[in-house]
Image 1 (cartoon, rainbow, N blue to C red):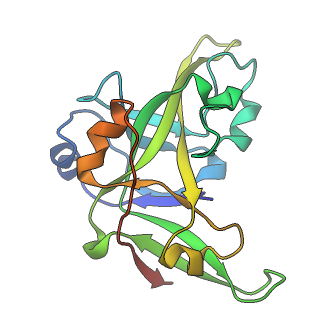
Image 2: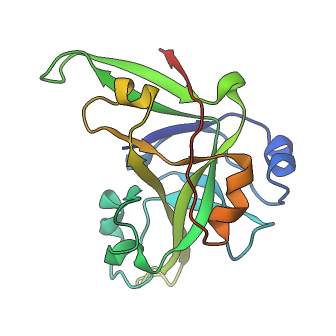
Length: 193
């Protein structure tokens, strides 16, 4: 699964690469802290948005569900009530972190930073929704990263649960937002840190 990511590029570079205006976050993110990620929603493809990591469906009564919705499984995202009505989005990053188990108990682990060669920007396939806090009325945009079965180098690195985030090629980004099926095959670079 994908619970840690980073985006280290400037606002100007992100806006240029994704041909969109709007706010851009920069930093290293721990999904369990529910940080805001920079995203691009299908309904507003030229407007960058800040999306809180951990999807809260619009129908949810409280935000505690987001502990379980950092990721959406590709294989079941259209069936699960939490994700079934969500909008597609791109979540912008230049890397994500995974741990390789070095023993069968998972006590010895090796941390990797994974990204495209050269550290260039990419987009995770994502799902987003807007939730109204029932106590304050505040509208909060939230998102989940779509994951799939691990392939290639990710089978070696994420060797416990055998999952990886769906990283889209530049040519697949608009297809994903339009609701088309994609077959992501991205070459990753993994750096042990």
